[in-house]
Length: 423
Image 1 (cartoon, rainbow, N blue to C red):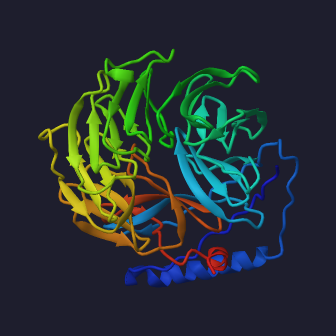
Image 2: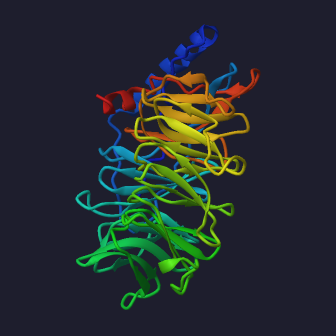
Image 3: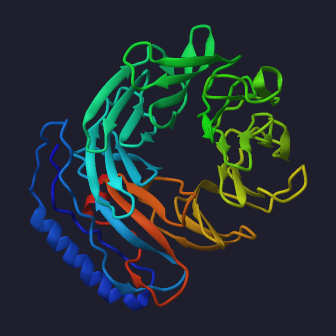
């Protein structure tokens, strides 16, 4: 597939009056460039071919005030009349999904567009991707679409059952996914190397499996709508000495599990967030929410973030505290955790703004008023925030924590293309 080689820089406004004149002049320059490009079209070639290399939009260098957000890189993906709907982070890659179910593969460090993959019909579910080395796996309603990083379709594996959860992969060729059958839910282990007889094994559960499995070292953990958290080895043998190798909560588990070397984290509809010892399934600590929990916990090096049923975000110390944990803080009106650094937690608010919270107290310190992003990824590895607009502008955003740095502020409006798309 051939992608256009031109990109339109975004228009910017600023909250800083000191840089208003320079920003306005650059905005008119952006309009002039955009006007020169009106009427240009591009045509897709063979969908089995990778996209032409599209360079990121170069940043404009300005003096930046402290307590704001700057653009690290920006890339406009060629949507061909569609709209961007989702963004995902996986290893060194950024994935953007469009409404017509194309996947745009972007280098995470540079913003370079690497390939375009027309995965499936918009009438079919397209779940978040799984990266296994050079292979990209896209779960749909009942198939696994396997591509390489250059955008070439390697195989389409029809599983013969409905996929109920997001998928997890283990290199080189194993996919774990919650599956639906007429007689109940299962955890299915799929061998990507086979076209027939592709199941390594399946684990029967007492309810549906809508929770994404998590793998820590070699053990697979999955939550069920029967309220259990199951732990199995790669050969399906039980990893815990509990009945059925499962911990039982008092309510269904709908959200994805989270896990690391410290523990396995499960939010239950019984109103408790559990931290389980991954070696034996016993409770290391728990937090009482006093209301059903359905959102996936976000786990970082020191904290566990849990969104509650009233839309608040609770931060809990992961490694230190009583068995019945008390929150470090609660912040109202938070839709999503975006990233964190040593002193700040960056979130998406209910108002659609990016906000920096004090990591110690949860107090809101500063915000960005740009509200045209349609999707953000959650990044637990660094402070960089990744977002995409409906018009396909993908931006890697870095917080500005001290004055004197140079770069380009992330403000609204973003430009003519996005303004039209958002109408």
